[in-house]
Image 1: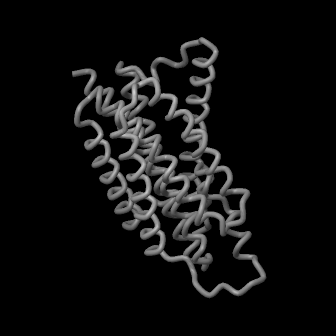
Image 2 (image 1 turned 120 degrees about the horizontal axis):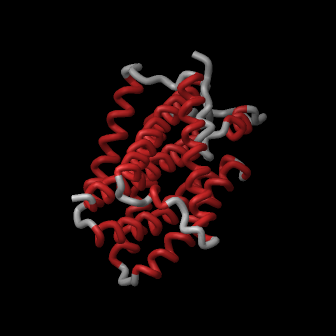
Amino acid sequence: MKEEISRSNPVFQEQVFRSVQSSPFEVVQVMTASGVCQKTFILLGLLLMTAAFAWFRPCPPEALCQQIILFSLVAFGLCIAVRFCPPQAARIIAPLYALTEGFVFGAISRIAELRVPGVVSQAALSTVAVLAVMLFMYRRGIIQPTQRFTLVVFSATVAIAITYLLSALFSAFGGGGFSFLHGNSLLGVGVSAVVCVVAALNLILDFGFIENQIKNGAPKEMEWIATLGLFVTLLWIYIEVLELLTKLHSRD
């Protein structure tokens, strides 16, 4: 099968992997699936540490919102940096990203829990379930990252990103943003459900990209980049599921 590139993920870029594979030095160890899994648990542990700090630290909602904006910008900058820094830097950038995002997700989760008690645990379990289902469907060949599939998911992801960006810009300039994105109307719930599906389908692209790199003998140091890319998708799924569940509970 022709190698497909998960272009919708800012971390998974072919040129990053090629820059190491074409290096003049000899590669002794190669990238493995178990290595990616181990590093995923490492990043998860780091994220939970700072998330717990943000969760339990006494802080008014206004300060939590400022914290979310600040650390989100830093995390985004780290994602972009990994594309331009030497691949070896990923072993530093990836943990820093996890620690930074921990503050973001701890603050967001705390706000959501205050509004709807119990919603955070539901979102976390749902995210794990989505990961398990997507991995099962990928391994069984039920869904494969074909060229058409990749194009559709990529287009949908870009459309979502543009919509969120325009809403944020309109809101920043006093336009109020797109209220349906965060409202609990049927339209708002439907939009959140669609975004959750698109985010979940991005996992198929991530799995395919990682598997292709393993088959091509990517160096072991690239496991950090592969892990970071997968981590970005998982965190996106969690946020979207959390928002969807919050909307559904608010309609009760």
